[in-house]
Amino acid sequence: MKRKTLFWIVLFALLAAGGAAAACLHGGGTVAVITVDGREWDRVDLSAVAVGYETTVETDLGWNTIRVEPGSIAVIDADCPGHDCVEQGAITDGAIPIVCLPHRLVIQIEGP
Image (cartoon, rainbow, N blue to C red; front, top):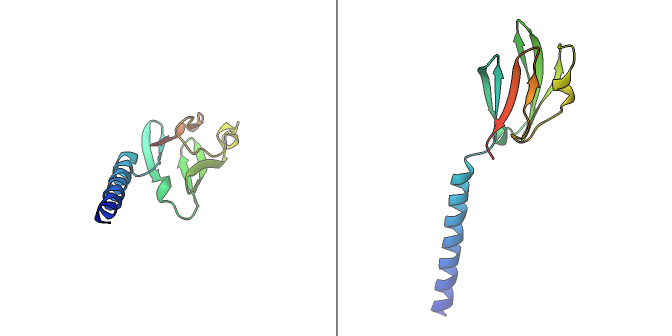
């Protein structure tokens, strides 16, 4: 009986240690980095967002309204002529950034 109990204690300890190691390697979540003309404007930890919100980036070149949701980010409105940044939709990973060339805006997701 003691042997079986010791087995389960060791097994659960190893699983807990593995989970903790995975959490450390994960790095805390995905972060959206918003840059304007090559300068960082904001960083948003998308894994920490509980309630969605909107923010507007205004420059001399124009404005972009950005919608931040838990795990995703999108440009929902802009005064640029093509609206390619709006039509791209929300992004959830770092595969493809959102780019608004007329406003020199880039939104890139860093992290897993």
